[in-house]
Length: 253
Image 1 (tube, rainbow, N blue to C red):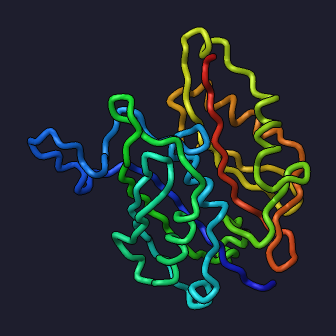
Image 2: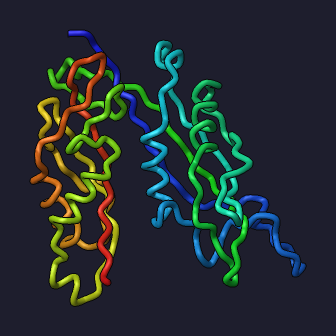
């Protein structure tokens, strides 16, 4: 069997203190804010949602893939008071220009955000965003097991939709807010990771990032674990196991 490689991109998002943090002692507002009273929002959620969007849109450069180039690119950009992304630049290179350029390309084409605010007014906010490109062999020859892909030529599809929208609707229709959590006003975001197998079944559902509440985490795992079958992802025309990351937000209304 031809030995493929897995492209695993961990995307982490954090607000950092750049030059904008030097507020000096004057009353003059900084050009960019690094800390704000109301953070920018992407598609109505926090920056973690942006990480998933980047994950869906990034493409491992073919030449970098061929030569086995890997690395971590640290980007810095501004989310303007209008919600646009601007001034995307590499503050720490991966060591490979192709990987750096791909990271910049994707982040620069971001849809509009809801801008951050200070004293109720929209402001420019400085963000730092690292993207890690990591190649690993698909086959663990010692263990004889197949490692799932994180990025594939043809993404898995749920009910004919590969954007995740239909699966999100299905999950929302199945989730039951735990009564104890609702009574105690417990809320949170659970980030799950699972594999969509080459036969379309969902397996190995784990909590990649807890909501802070075990009962919320358990409910998210329960629902995703009973997912109907997907259309599997494909690499070189062949069905493959695909690793998937999926957030579930619990909010008391």
